[in-house]
Image (cartoon, rainbow, N blue to C red; front, top):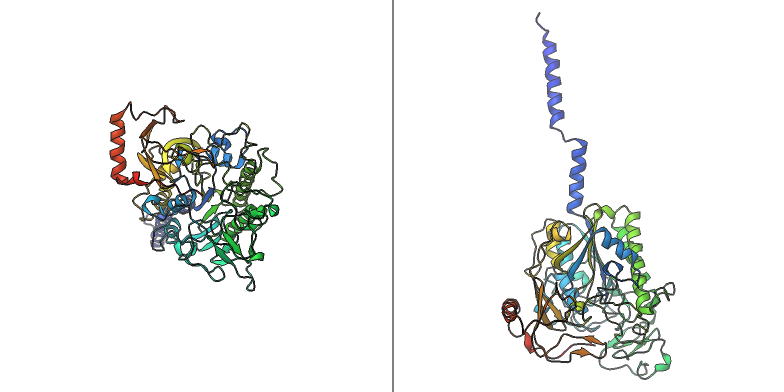
Length: 524
C-alpha cells in the first residue's frame, strides 16, 4: 500500500533534523574549544627575587632556610637545575628578562644609579609589548632599576619615559633599589603621596646643605653602613645618593613587602576577567634587609634569612589570591632571581655572623658580581597547574628565552635574535635547552657550551674583599666541565687545549674579540 505524501514530508524533516544535529558541535567539543582558548592565552606572572641564591631555596637543597611556598611551585612545576639570569648583577639581568637581548649589547646596561635615564629604548621589543598586542593587560609591581626619564628627572612632575612607555599599562615601582634614593614609590609616573609644598630633590654627587648623612651622623642610624652606603639617611638607614624633601612620600622600609604584595593582589583581582601579565619584582633579599616585625627572628639567621622567609610568605599569599579568584589553572607562573647571593653588601646586618650551616650559593662557586656559576645560575621554576607535569630539568635555559617562548605561547610572531623559543622546555615537554650561552658579571663575560664553561682572562682582583666573593678574574683562561666539576675546582684549560680553542672560537663568533679590554669593575 502506498504511503500518504505527508509521511514522506515527515520523514524528510526527521532526516534533516538528524543531519543538522550531527553537524553541530557537542557540548564537550565546546568545552574543549574553550579550554584550548584558555590554554593559548593564560595569565602570566613573573615572580622575580633580588639576590636570591641557588642554595637559598629548600627545593634547591637548603636545609636551614624554609621556603615552603617556593618549594610548592618547584615541586608542582618544572625545577630547572641549569637556569640562568643573564648577568650576575641586577640592572643587566632585568634588561635581558624584559627585552630578550644580551645586556652586553647595550653599553649602558650596568648597575644603574637612582637617577639614570631609561635603559630600554621605547621602540624596543619587550615582553609586555608582545602581550599587549595580544590583548593582555600588563602590570609591574615592585623593583624597577632600569632607569627613568632622560637623565634629568624632575621628581615633582610626571616621570617619563618609564615602565608605561615600554609596554606596561600599570606600574607601581620603586625607582631603583631599596638602598638608593629617591626612597619613594612611583605609580604610573607620579611619586605617590607627594605634597606640592615639599618637593623632592635628588643628587648623586653633592649633599644638600644641612642634611645629615650616614658618614657624618652615625648617632642617627639604626643600621650601620659597611661600605658605600653612607649618604642621605631615611628611616634611620643610610643610603646611596643624596635626597631632600618628599617626607610624606618616603616609604617605610619594614612595610615594603606588604605594600608591594597588596598592590599585586589588587592588580590580580582587578584584572581577573581578562588576560593579564604581572611582573611581580620582589625587593628581597637585597639590602637593606628590613623584615616586618612579624618576621624578625623567623629564620634564626638575622635579617637576610628573615626577609627570605618574608618573601616566601608573600609568594604564598599571592598564590592564595589566585586560588580565591579561581585563576590557578589558567596562570603560568615563572619564578627566578636577578643574580646570585651576597651576604655583606653594604650594611652590618649579621648576614655573615648568623649564617650558621646555611650556604646561599649551594654547591656552586662564587656569588653576586662573579663569573663563577653562583653569580648567574639561580632558582628557575615554571608552574602551571594542570598544564605542566612536575619534573626536574637539566636543560640549559636563560631568562632571555622567556620573551620568544611566551611569544610562541600566545601565537605571536615577534622574536629577538638572542632569545630562543624554548616553550616546550619551559612546559616540561622537552629537555632540549640551549647549546650555548654567554654569561656576564660587571661587563665581563664567560661562555657556556654544552657541559663546559670557559672564562677568559681578566685583569683585576681575584676576590672582591668588600663582599668576600670570588669574581672569576684570572691571568689565564679557565675551563671547567660542569657535569664532573660543578664546584669549578679543576681548571682544564691547560690539559685540554683543543676544547679551549674550540670554545674561544665559538665565543668570539658571538661576542667579538674586544672582551678582554674590560679592566674596571662597576661595583658599588
